[in-house]
Amino acid sequence: MASDGGEDPAVLAVNGASAALMASSIPWNGPVAAVRVAIIRDGSGEREIVVSPSDEVVESSDFTLFYAGNDSRTLMIEAQSNKSGGLEESMLADALRVAHRAVRELLPAQIELAKEMGKPKQELVPAAVTSEMKEAVYAAMKTRLLALYEEHIQDKHERGRKMAELQSEVVAELIEANPEWAESVDALGSAYFQTCSRVMRERIFDTDTRVDGRGLYDLRALDGVAGLMPIVHGSALFERGNTQALATITLGSLDDSQKLDNLTGPTSKRLILHYSFPSFSVNETGARGISRREVGHGALAEKSLLGVFPDEESFPFAVRVNTETLESNGSSSMAAVCSGSMALMDAGVPIKEHVGAISIGLIMDEDETTREVKRYKLMDDIMGLEDVLGDMDFKIAGTRTGVTGIQLDCKPMGIPLEILIEALDRASAARQKVIDVMERAVKTPKTDVKDSAPRFGRASIPGSLIGKLIGPQGSNIKALEKDTGSKVAVLNDDGDLAIFGPNKASYDAALAHIESMKNSIIEVGKTYVTTVKDVMPFGAVLITSNGDDGLLHVSEIAHERTENVADVFSVGDVVEVKCVAREGPSGKIKWSRKALLSLPRPPGREKPRFTVNKRQTSSE
Image (cartoon, rainbow, N blue to C red):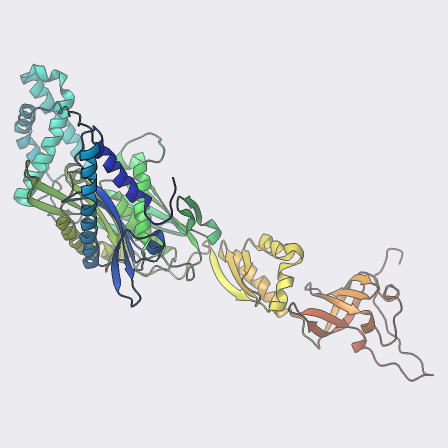
């Protein structure tokens, strides 16, 4: 309803929802709590971990962490780096431990609330899957499922087809042997799913071999290519096994930054990443709108790349990154980060280093009563089946030296924190291999950006020319922008300019116009051919071919007194004059005609004659 910027509304939402569930009659394995943590620098430059920082503190922090958990385990993590290069794993581990201690301090109040105000919990009706059914499915499937797993099928769709055929075969056999189960096809399907997970886990625990034949820490085949689309400002394709992500870059001016009206106030962002997961990437059809999953994955990828994105001073552009998943077998969001990083370099965005990304998976063997973890295995670069049947999808993005983005998804009732800290180190080692492949495609930002890409630069003109550049009511600068397609901004009274062109040709045209203005500066003491623009009682306004106008005062027309200016000049007459002064901050021009005329002869002699090139009329 309102926010003073002192606390993250998402933190309050998690804590409030947990407290409400604790006091309700809904079956609930809570309580849980959430905190926001930031890593800041004190006056001496030393880093400090702060719990529940304000929005103002978060803005200037090195790293921000959103953490949720219960008394003994971690339930959710989202984090991002706000400084170039990311945060090293050791400091991140310290922040996670601080966050978990802070979460534990919030739990007793919820427990006390439930004691004082809580309602009796409703009875939870157990699922229709009986232990007899689970054991029957396991016995019927184990040998055949192991044989299928040991084929080490690389293609996701072929493996899925064979597993579906096995499910149909086993369900038919069990219904034939147990006719009363004919009404429990859904329960048998659930038992089948549990068996697939159980057999996969047992095989990994026993052999350290995964379904596709990889070891625990083996990555799928990696490949990447940059600049594959010649027209767009930047492009890259990243491939990891059966997962492919294509990223394209569009550069724009700062006016193209996305404007946001958040609860905490209006803001904007220069890096905008759109993550797309079309149906065809998983061999499906059908049009649909964007999903919450796509929004979440896009936000994660965007946060991960922000850790290396240049500031506005060094790169005054807005950037849109569009990542499209062409094929998916797990970790498509991490592939989006990798392709996005390569595409940024291909577009010439001056990021200092690549951001690589990897998903770490987990299987745990827990005691059913105490939930004590008896054994566990971490797995690098999980594929889709390991995500579905495993316990964790820990998405970690970063540079060679630090983490820039994190998101944790877990399926059991939380993950022990020390296992997650171990996973951070596993991700760091795997990330080096990923970045090696990315650097083979493009190692540094390109300096020779495409002619179709926008250009930004600075120029300067004398302060006296600002009025000429802008023109009456902005007419001159509007005409310049219309003719060239570029945007020109006057930064200060000294004449510093900022020029943004949508492409090289547009930028060059605007710059050439500005340079021509500088080269046509009216200098005091020089002679110019002008045209009469206006005639007034006190003088005439004369303008040069470059548009510089000034006043020829009646006293500067001739050595003799001029009674009526209109008797001497008409609009359109061509007059040769001399610039005798530039006055005021804007450098107003003062013309003199008499400075070019000979002095009058002494009395009695013939007066000097002078001519004015009068405009010819049709009657002439």
